[in-house]
Image (cartoon, rainbow, N blue to C red):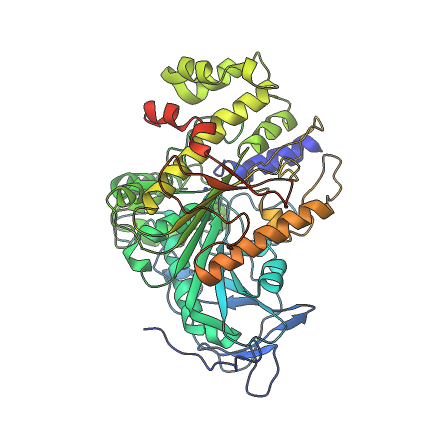
Length: 543
C-alpha cells in the first residue's frame, strides 16, 4: 500500500520538487451583506451569490471568474464570465482543473474549472478588509485551490481569502502557431481571477485597493512571473513567495527516482512551440493547417495521457515578454512590497519518497545520485557536501537539492526584488513540522517542502503519519502557526511584518538576515541563509 501511495505521490509531485468595475458593495459593518442584511448573500458584478455560514467564516465556493475554457476557448485567453440573473448557489468548490495526476481520492477533474472560492470572516468589520489571493502549488501541473482551507487565515487575520483554480499542464501552457498569446494560459487565468477580485472585492467586505497575491512552490513561481508580467500591473498590491521563485529549478532525480531535470518554469516561445508540435504529432494532428482545430477536438483524457510534458510557461508574448529571470536582472518588475522565503529542508520530502519506493538514499547510492543530478560538477558537489558532515546520506542529499534548487534561487530573486521596493525574507525551520510525505524510518522529517502550509491552512485529511493516521498540530505548533498567520496577514494589511520584539529586518543584500520560524514561538531568531545554504558555492558553479 505504501509503495502504491508513493507512486501516486511521485506522479503528482514530479514537477514540483514551483478599469476596475464597482460591484454592489456591502456596508463596512457586515462582510458580504446584500441590501437585505444577509451575510451569506452578495451581489457581484457577475450576479448574486448564495454562500454558506460556517462557524467563524462565511464561504462562497465555486464562483466562476471566466467562461469555461472548452471548445473554441481551449487554448485561448480567458473570456469574462457571462453574468447570471438568478441567485447562484455558491456552496461547493468547483472541480480541480484537468491534470494527469489528480489526488487518488480527490474529486473528478474537469476542463470547466475556472472558479474561485472566497472565505470571509463572519464577524462584522469596521473598515474594508485586506484581500489575499492564493495560487496553489503543483509545479504548473497539478493541484487545486480547494486543497487549502483558509479558515484560520481569514478568521484570525481578519482578511478576505480567495483561492483560485487555473489551467494546468497541457491545457495551461501548450503553444502552437496560430494560437493567441500561447503558452501562458494558466498565468492569464490568474490575471483574469485577479481582475475579477479587484472588481468584486467590495461585495465581500474586501478592500479592492489592498490585494496580496501569494502562493507556494509552483504557485510562488507563478507569483514571481506575475511580478514581471506587464499584463498583471495594477492587479495586486503586495506579493508573498513561499518556496518558489523566478529561478526555481530541479536537477535530474530531484523530484524522485528517474525524474528528469527541470531547468526552469520558463521556456522561449520557439522551444514551447516545438514542444506543442510534438504533442500534436503524438495525437495524430500532423497537418499544420488544421493542427489547432484537430487538437481542440481531442478528448481531455487523451490529452492528459500523451507523453510529452508541458510544464513551463512560454516567454515572448504579451504575458511574459521576456524570461522572468531576465526581467528581474534588468529591473522590469512591479514595485510592490514582497515577503519571500523558504523552508530549511525543502527536499526532505523527496528523500522520504525514495525510501517509500524502496530506493532509500544510502551512503553507497549518494555519489551516483549526485552524479545523475550534477554531471561534471558532481565531484565539486560531493566535496562541498561530504557525507561526514551529515547524520546520514538522506540528509546530505536533501541539503544538496534544497540549496541548489530552492533556497539559493529564492535568495537571488529576493535580492533582485529588494532593489526596487521593501522586501522581507524568512526561513521556516521548525524541525518538528509534520512531513508532507511520511518518513518510513520514523525519524523527524524536518522543515520540508510545503510543511509550512499546515501552519497557515487547514488541509482535510492531512498531514498523514507513516501509519496512515492523521497528525494534528501540537499546542506549541499551533502557537507557531498563530505567529505565522499574524505575520502573513499583517503584511497583507500594511506591507510589512509585525513590529515590536522580534521584528523582521528588511532585506539589504545576500548577507542580510532573515526571520526564522523555529519550534519555539517565543524566541524568534535571525540567520544568514546564503552562508548556511552554500549559495556562494552554487553561484561559482553557475547554478
